[in-house]
Length: 265
Image (cartoon, rainbow, N blue to C red; front, side, top):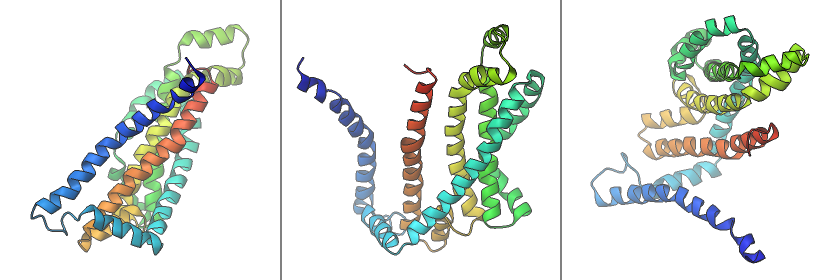
């Protein structure tokens, strides 16, 4: 095998994967363009892609779209950091006490299963309409998803590893750093990723109901004026931003961190 063939080999699977990933979107975009053109569906119900693209460019150039995106990302970042700063340390502390963990795990599972949007009415009563309610819903949703995943991760560590560490004279801190964190790391990373997905959906829902700006607010406000092109644009942005966050941040962090702890070949 020549050096040239070896150099070219990684590029082919990558291009194939990109094409495979893009194909469904091309099919959907084509169908979307054809349906309004070949049917009597009014443009206000299903505007063509060209209309949505025109709306995107005009809102981008006047700065309104970037402003809404920035508001949403700021809230998401604040809620994500706040929720996880509390959830992960607390989850580790709970999981290290077996009796406490067994008692609280069903409770955490219960709250983790409640959708973020279900907290919005209570948030409005507590904090009113605006920034406080939205931030509470995001942080609350992220907190329960992350703490539950952390507790489950620690509980999944084989007890023999704890006993082996104690036999070698490990202190409690040594056990946390050499057994608990590496052993629960994969599940913690899953929690970080899952909580972001839950938080993102909670953000959009909370902005629609209790927000005064942001992508969710922009989308719902457009419904009142039958600006369907803005509604569809908002939906597309919600999907693209989440895929970007997952691909550019979480996948690299997950890959590097897991390799660092020797859990990935």
